[in-house]
Length: 160
Image 1: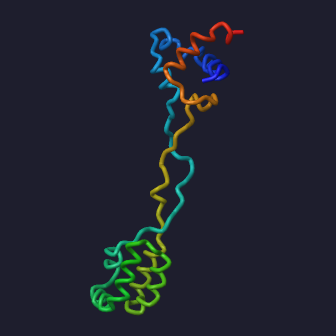
Image 2 (image 1 turned 120 degrees about the vertical axis):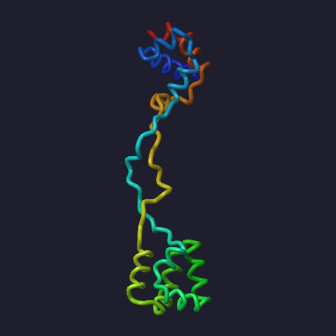
Image 3 (image 1 turned 45 degrees about the horizontal axis):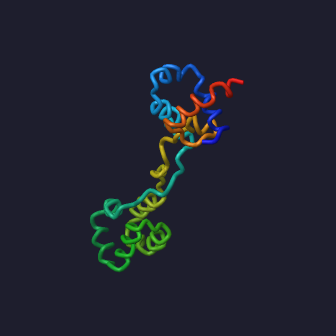
């Protein structure tokens, strides 16, 4: 840390919150507190993404008699189930146009509802980290040595 950063740190360390740890020379605990980042709920709502459709979901949507009809068309069904497994929504919908002629209108609606279903993006973080005290002060990560250096190097100059 340069002198300006150490003076900024010294000013922070003059707060009463650090007095006890300074008195007991808990330099690492002070550094840890300065670098700690609180976790809070993510204020940004999760975006929605297409819900993954498993082959099992697809088969469950078929009526028993339709399972045989659909799977007798093995090339089309294989391509369709592979598109489900790779989550290729565009190809899945294109293949479905041909496959839906093999099922009842009710089943076609049920499968199209599966294809249109959305869920909250599972990769969206539920929590986010707040900036640490050091980040708020514009300082790099503080070490126990930085705490000691700031306290013992600048007490007179920083007070001016």
